[in-house]
Image (spheres, rainbow, N blue to C red):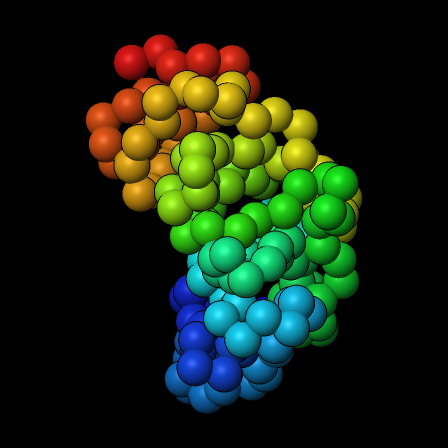
Amino acid sequence: NYGIGGMFDTAIGSIIFINPDTSAIVASLIPDVSSSSSNRPWDIVYGDPNRQRLYSIGNPNSAGHDFIHVIDTSTHAEVGKSTYAGGYVRMCPAMAISSDKNSLYVFQSCQSPINISKYDLTTDTPTQIASVPFGSSLTGKNIVLSADDSKILVDSGQVWSAGLKGRIG
């Protein structure tokens, strides 16, 4: 397996796989995105090493929708993505993944209203299972999960339950 250090080239929209021992590029992949010229990889996170998965999302802004792309790190191929009905991304997305690698949180800070959604990653078709309630006055630009995965910490100082049932701080 090769290391993935969050490498992507937004100019051409490719995710680059690098051998950490030699610094050689061993593969690159352009995710299957909409035809929007502004939609390029925006954020990536590494999933469960046993399943060899990488998750990527684009940033189409108002030009359309993108999805959570599932990439096999052993074959360097896209093996799945979320569906329109199962959840899509649009505006300035950022991701955080749970420590068990079974849940992915997507924070869309430029969307109105700002939104956090939780996705199930147990298959190669990520499915939205929860979302912050509409009109919840969410603010910020980025998120991280608490060490025990019980809270979502927003860089604005807000704290949300991991189940997205409400703001707790």
